[in-house]
Length: 185
Image 1 (spheres, helix red, strand yellow):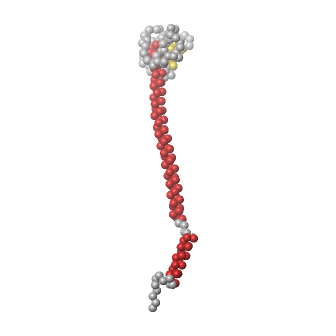
Image 2: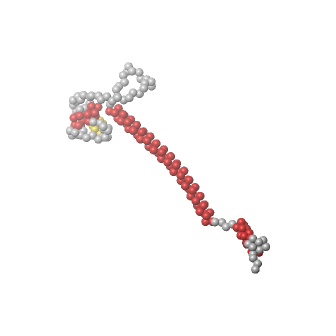
Image 3: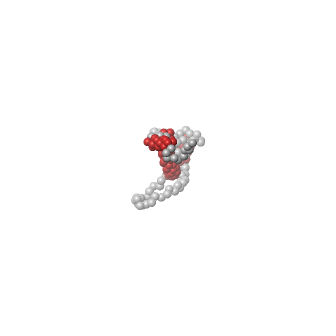
């Protein structure tokens, strides 16, 4: 019997196997099979990655806005306290009657520096005055926040009792803001 050598060039099986291998290689090169599942997954991952990058940029902007808002809140709180302090100063000034300017002082106030308001309580002595007679039309006073019967009466040259009698008030009346009181006729 004749033995076949595996690497014999004259062997027809080797030539046949080599031909089949060449055809398979040509088929793979000429007609490559696309893996559409892998490509779809890759496209989805890329779009998700771009979405994540956009979200990261937006959250960075939101963080910047939050810090700006916190800064504005602190500024607003400071302005609010400044306004409240100014309101308190104005209320204190309105309770004290301003002094009349004397003729000896110059009227030029453009070079003077503004002075801090120093509230000095003035003692007003109450002189007993007879209640005015009810003739003519009554004069009214609109009560402001924080005003007392004593302050109102002394402003119009009345005693507290006279003011109470004019308005038919009891011994311990409670004043309310914007209340109208008769102060004279």
